[in-house]
Image (cartoon, one colour):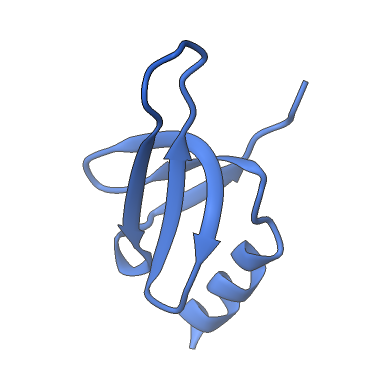
Length: 70
């Protein structure tokens, strides 16, 4: 029940820089896609390298912090 509310709220923040914490990782990037089971975060590199796309299971998320844009 809570997951549906959580993903619905996250979906309103697509395009926002976020910090996502799981048990093992702290991921910072752009929230790109939200589904019932997964979110897609794109780690944006300030250089010319590739951007990493990370799919994260909603079940694995401990918290999401919305980051202020400068």
